[in-house]
Image (cartoon, rainbow over the protein chains, first blue to last red):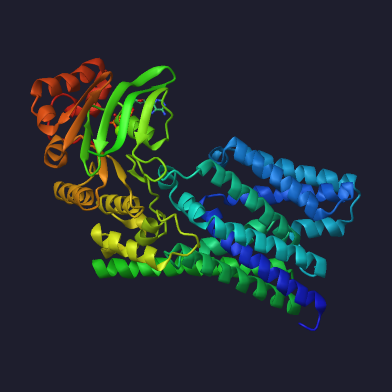
Length: 271
Length: 256
Ligand SMILES: Nc1ncnc2c1ncn2[C@@H]1O[C@H](COP(=O)(O)OP(=O)(O)OP(=O)(O)O)[C@@H](O)[C@H]1O
Ligand SMILES: [Mg+2]
């Protein structure tokens, strides 16, 4: 399958996105931001639809909308979003806006499908370069802020006590998430960004107790999922996103079973 | 004597309600300084002000060398989700913030090992923090504060949930840190026996009343203690009294 340019592109872009999602996902899960990630991807959908309507580059629309969305969430306070119904209001509103822009812009049905469900085959060289830049940017920022972010994500009380600027960390992370979501929407579509960003990370938690181990494992699961999805999609013509998510979900359930077995065994030992 | 922290004329109020008013004291290097007083006296508020988490309306808190003083803090309420998956070792190492690279240096690994053996947390280093007992968690929290090499250590009822034996062991650790490394310790406790055993000096406080002295001066003045603890309980309504039955005069019981 590698004789085709589009498959090569898909593998390169998909692998990069997987690494990025795998790494950032560990923090998204630790900070309980899964639904905010989901909402951001819908805001991104509205942004891309707006871009189509206004005739600008989709990535520009995505970034503008998700960054503004992240700032809004940060301003109102993440905590409120975790419980409140306001998150579903915003999510629906973003989806509705997207639909509005798509119909106003008289956009082809094809494009809307791509936005919602992703398209791994339509990636050209220029897209790849953008994805390379975004991935490197996200990973570098995560690396630079790693110690602070790690502290704040896994022990906010301790981080605040140690004098870390937890509010700025929170807003900075939301912005970074917005950037990552924008790059990912283009590949897997708005509806499944959330899956790629949280399922591998959630699965990794079953297998290791070390934060760095989680990051490695989460990226590995994400990469394998993307590779599996592309290969299976190529040979069956079924949607790639389906196979990616199915793979990640399978690893998640295996992890759950694995943990249950370990616990039972430990329980038996101590009994 | 070197002053680690000097608090002068501190005043803190929340929405117009004065919690601390004109409170002054200082703590020397390597000193064990206890803060006692009834519930709601403002003890936690005092520690948070020293940390800078609360901005005082008035007064000053001067650390010995502002830029270099590292303050370690073990807060009073620290809820850890039982499902928190990370190991005790990773939890302690969260406190190591100063390295340049994302990964720990050799030196940092060494310090981590030392602190974990010092606090006797290495036995369960690989266990998820959510699965540890209350007392084990307290030691992990202490280790996380110590791994930063604090000059000043603030402990807010860190021994409250421990069995008597674990309380002693924890305080011995803290005392050892104070004497070996010159860490100044300010600890809040409701257990006056523990205070008698481990404190050098004591601050007794209730709303608007502060008295600092050696532990003998404070703890042997039964009349004053009785006064301070009772003045609050007679103000309070029945519900509060039920919650803290020892608010009257119980010198060794530790509420909660
Ligand atoms: N952020 C806040 N906003 C409003 N009031 C507060 C705040 N923090 C503390 N208070 C009030 O200040 C008073 C002192 O609280 P603080 O937590 O310092 O008491 P404490 O001496 O530590 O008591 P305890 O022994 O119960 O821990 C209480 O009446 C409390 O209601
Ligand atoms: Mg308190």
